[in-house]
Image (cartoon, one colour):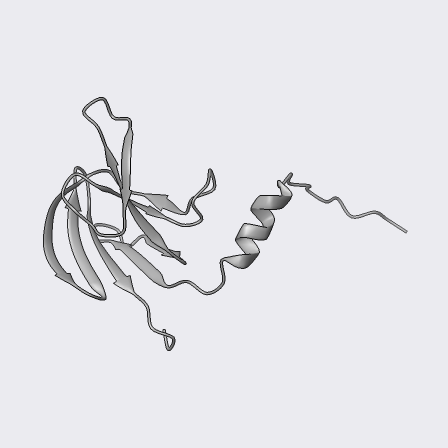
Length: 112
């Protein structure tokens, strides 16, 4: 009987529980230039000071803020560079530009 080679990936147990608890994604981010798509259960907007150090986190987007997609630890899904312009914003959608990309962020419904 032969043994199968298995790759073992170390995972800290608290991170595993957080990943399992994440559930169904509530947000979808699409990068305009190449269609790169990322999903997330939640999002937060980070603000940094002049030295590039964390200053505050927000629930609303704003110029200068960076989008962070959950989980909110070292295994985050995606983080954008700072927002330079918001071109369209509704309750369930935002289109924004960063220093190097244009993104669309969609709030998903239960049907999506």
